[in-house]
Length: 231
Image 1 (tube, one colour):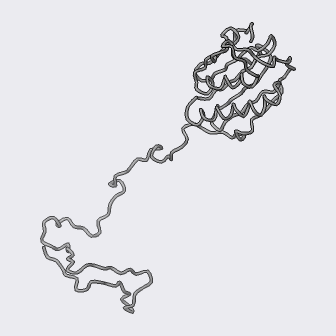
Image 2: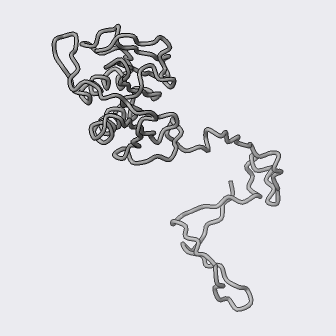
Image 3: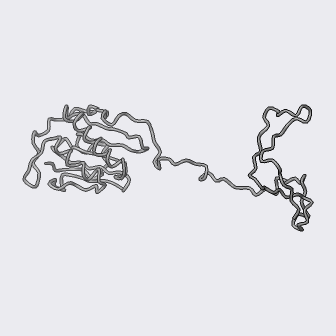
């Protein structure tokens, strides 16, 4: 194959009129002994060499970019605006509640205050078991859920029941926030006034927690069977 030797290592592109470099010209630097093939070489492989050959856009392979390839990682659960978790909404019962017992006597011989009873409901609500806690007789309570939500209600008198509700999955950050949120609801709303209940919606869609005391067998209750006995 015939080759042409470049006798200079650096070649500067110049304007033929004044032999001075033009603005924007670049330096082409080649290492020593570099050979450049010419189209008139005798190599048969060069017979089809066409310096002015053009390529049709239809000859260029296309790459299909799918929406998955263009998307960026996102939180798998859609988000919504929310209040800070430390600031649950507190609401007075729609109708006055009769004064409940000071102490609630459980079936295991222990007793509990109004806020302590709600603490007992945290575990089955936040772990997803959705079962009546130990120490609470089954005839005075109801656990209602379908896998997407859970409500546990406990009758504490002939006119008042305590309850806790969530429709959030007991996994990941939502499981952690269940414990924090329900704790804040109990401490900030119910402890101050048992006639108040509290709620908080998280930043995940459908993330919601509610707890407190209300009228026995309230129309808003999830349990369809009426509670007829109490602690």
